Image: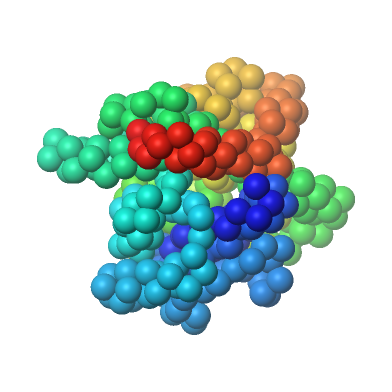
Length: 386
């Protein structure tokens, strides 16, 4: 396995991917990460520096993925694969043109292919005809690495055989987040004053966009405050709804809401460290890595039932609560419950740290390696696809 050349193709290497890819490179010395461009509009964070701990080849340095025409992406990816000749292809999704081009390159040469799939059936509206096309495409991969229970259920629904599906989880650098949070808490008074944050607050970290369900979140928070709740609400992020949400807060006179704006990756941990509870109210969320991040910092979590991470990370009445994203009353009631019991709050935070300790980059890398090995074994046995 040490000499096997593995090409892992992604749209762009995000900051949140680095720890996992570094751990995977330690498991698989033949790994070559190929990203289309430096960044994506939707996820603008960029890795700091070039020494990431794994071999990386960026096809269009200095460009944004969404700005590159799909034909140009496909042709360039194919040219790179022809040059480095990987023996296994791993793709980061099934829909982007560069990923499809990489898979087709491998299929033509009867090279094993691994699909990393984060999609769940309920993360967006599904049309029958696109599901048929998707099923035909997904079943061509030799193995499929899924993030969790809901992604596995969707892969099986699309017709992938159970023996071809491998759960790997979805991870962040827990140690880095925990260390940052502990450092901030040792200087809590100074940091809270620097960031102008309230003593107690609910936190959401997300794009300010419709799928994050932030209007419902603010309605629930408004109801919580009208009922006598004292905690604040801090929103970290930016996006197309930013002005609308700010106007909503002004028009409805919702007190205690703080828009922190978009923050670079290394500027986010202080907001987790000083928060009392994370809330993720999304109506569409394939996983929700912010839940991992918050739990690594020891926070209780309130998580929408629509989030893919719920079965793995949100343990009801152990480290938080789940809620229906369309029920403002339910979320407001959970805000009251969480903010009214300091002993439970502390116990939930400790449980979050304990639960997330099973979701590390090293564990992810071992599971992903197993998926890749299975693809190679199926290829050797002439079982080309699932």
